[in-house]
Amino acid sequence: MAGLYFHIPFCRRICAYCDFYKSVGTERMEELAAAMHRELVTRREYLGGEAVRTRYFGGGTPSLCPPETIAGLLNHAEELFDCSSAEETTLEANPDDLTPEYLAALRRAGVDRLSIGIQSFDDACLRLMNRRHDAAQAVQSVRSAQREGYENITVDLIFGVPGFGGDSLRRTLDTALGLNVQHISAYHLTIEPGTAFGRRAARGEFAPVDESVSEEEYALVHETLTGAGFEHYEVSNYARPGFRARHNASYWHGEKYLGIGPAAHSFDGGERHWNVDSVEGYLAGAAAEAETLTDRDRFNEYVMTRLRTAEGIGLAEAEALFGPERTARMRHDAEPWIRAGTLVVSGGQMAVPAARMLVSDAVIEALFET
Image (tube, rainbow, N blue to C red):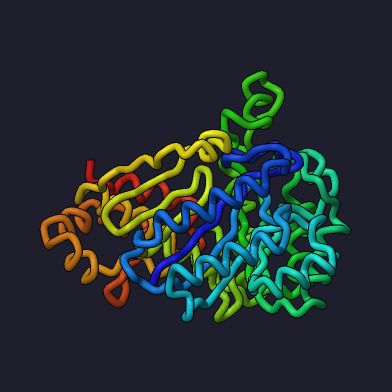
């Protein structure tokens, strides 16, 4: 089974933390959609005949895209790929785009899962991040989606924002839980150089929270959400039973996926491909770049993606994929982390306990083959 990803790069406003490729304005939306249709045709063989399990519209701000454009891309994909067993069609959305009319049209287009970028239910925090909605609009967007019949909704939250931990973060978590959504993604703020926060940090006007605050806030998120019945199944993701994000799982488990649109990435099982990160370049037909993964690359990606999940690494699977020598070396390098309790081996699986996943990057780096 494979995944299909559509990248809609347009935004009306640039958030202070965002490091993804994006472009302000929507005046070239129709032109971009036409180019995406052409790319679908030229890459119709990319998945090697595998059935498409999930479809995902990311960005940018896909909720700026007219519903008929969404429907057109989905319908065209169904003509070119086997989408008959598709289990999940997700669209990322900003709260203030989700009018009842737009929500109803999206459902008719085939979208059955919404990923709503709320980030916080604290208005001051939202202003700091340069979001274009307020807390009341965020709440209303979820309730409107539920009234329109959406039964699979995830909300994105950001923690680790200086000055907005403690009671502010607790209120945000409580508000999210009170909305009875099926999935919550909670990301720790990362200050990237090319962002507004990054530029402020370079001038000494903004600084990340320190490590102890990160650990406290991570623990608060983990304990609050798991205490409310959510499964902490990946470092930043929490789900009600049966509502894990299926599309993202294709990335974590090495499945094939095809990305359509500027800056979109694809993986065919052996090579990674990525489109130019420019609307102008994409419309001009710039060729995708490619990288063939070595055995070492594939092993390191396997370690990196699996140790971000609750299940972790299947030791028998690792040996079957990469051989006994590599697996034995990994087990040897893992011993200090196992003794410290940061890695746990049970039932043939080696995993970072969910409560410790904040430090998973250090474990992953230690197990990489260099």
